[in-house]
Length: 170
Image (tube, rainbow, N blue to C red):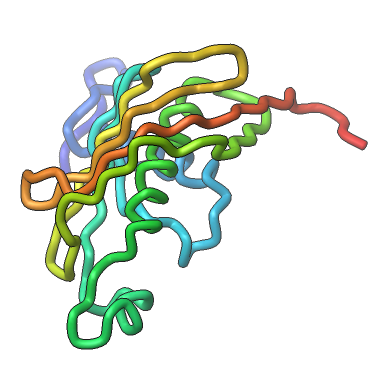
C-alpha cells in the first residue's frame, strides 16, 4: 500500500487514489443516466473533454441477451443498440456540464445514420461523440462507433436538454 500522507499530514495524490477518484466520478455520471441496468449499453468512460467530446467503451460478449435472437447462428449487435450507445455517451457529456439539479434529456432527432460493418461478439466498440452545436435546449452531436479501429456506424444526434434546479417539486 502506498503512503498518501506527506509530512505534516497533508494528502499526496498517487496513481492509486487518483484512479479511485476517477472511478467514483464516472460512477456518479453513470447514475445520472437513470437507465435500468440491462439497458445501459456502455461499459465505461475512457476520456472526456468538457463540452467538447467523449469516448466510451463497450465490450460485446457472446452472452449478451439480445444476441440470442439477433441472429441465431450469426449474432450481430442490433443497430438500435449501437445508436443507443452513442446517445448514452452524449447524455454523459451533457451530464458532466451540470453539477447539480436534475437533468432530463430526450432524443429529438437522429440523422445521417450509416451502418458500415457488423458488430459481433468479441468486438470492442469505441463510441466517439462530439458536441457540434448548442441552440437553447437543443444540443447537437456527431457520433461514431468504431469496432477494431474501423467505423461500424455513424450518426448525427439532437438531444433536447431540460434542467431542473433541486428544490421542492410538486
